[in-house]
Length: 399
Image 1 (tube, rainbow, N blue to C red):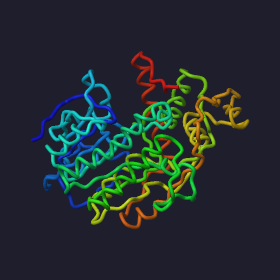
Image 2 (cartoon, one colour; image 1 turned 45 degrees about the vertical axis):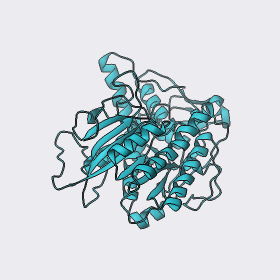
Image 3 (tube, rainbow, N blue to C red; image 1 turned 120 degrees about the horizontal axis):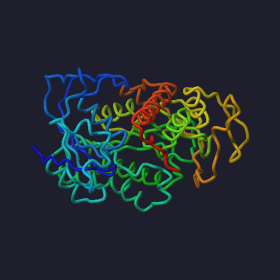
């Protein structure tokens, strides 16, 4: 059995999973029992298989690890070593005591560590979810973004090419690759025009994945994922900033949400739905690239209105641009815009067409936008209430 190191991990790290194949694809919903919850039992009729997952400590990685374990996967992880034993692992801490989940030390910026992990574990599947995924940060750290998000994918492909050519590779793409969109909705054939260093890095990762597929006959594919959220999304992302601030206002900790461009439109889905599509892409006969989206678009304004309504505040909007505000039914200003939260180059409209994924892989998202927002608000209301009951300050979204 590969070495198991219970070391802390960050998003650029990755996890290896030893899995058991099953002959069905159970539905994945936010309310279904996860592995290792009380009352959950793994099927006993399974054969052995191995996979590696980068970014396992993040939103998508934690959901994917649960999904794979639900299918019988034994999990190994390659993660970056940091000083504190539990730092950055809160989303997978519930998996650490299970004998099928293991961590190995490694880094997407270090070719040798990836080579060693792939060579030792000989994975059948490799899911590269690791990245510097917060788009605004990519302007502050463009070179690191290119190294981790772009070249990190190349390092994974090289490790597979050299040490496990049988391994199937999944690259997590992004709707940010489209940027200044040329088609509405966006499909697998829509040209890319990225508008951030993050988007540029993702385009490189997409193209190098396709190049290795065509050059080395590798089973390598990319899922172009549109915005997908959950209660596990980091507080720095606009969706969690909205839902956590709504919960904090409802409990009297804050008075107002400060936000950027409320008119930006996105295709938002539930991360738990999207990771099943990632898995399905590696189960098909031939590799291909797919748009993973809901086919519906909503503005940031729409999301704010829905989130605040769920905590009992009906908003009325007024003003334009940086002068946009929203007041509640008592006339109290609950939302204000701040120019510092606007992007240097905005992406105004993203909406994906998931028709190919539905046709070829039978995948359709099961969680609506309204259900997603309510799920996130409910989770943050619970988090804030637990802080109140425990006598400590609730989480505060960073500016």
